[in-house]
Length: 130
Ligand code: MN
Image (cartoon, rainbow, N blue to C red; front, side):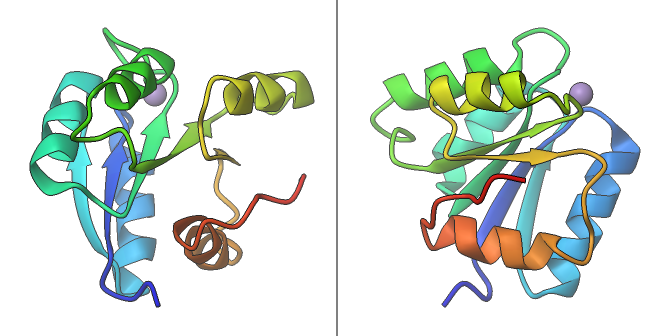
């Protein structure tokens, strides 16, 4: 059961952020949002969301470094974190999973598939290869 779960979106592109937020809220999720990693880490500590969607390319600290900081902090170490990235290459997907992300979603989002992907990620299912 994932309805009402809170999802933290860390995304510096306002349009992408709005799209993700609108789709998630339409499907009954609560959301919190940050436009940079530092703010995202603070929100993760304060709110302990069910899932974090982490843009990889962020100003300042990038999403991979942010993931490392979350994992090294006992307050946030167990939160599931999914990479959001425009990179479409299979090698990058492997690199992000190797970095410790719990999953990987490519932008632009597949909007019809997105709610199902999120529900599976919150439930801790492994992602299927695209
Ligand atoms: Mn970005």
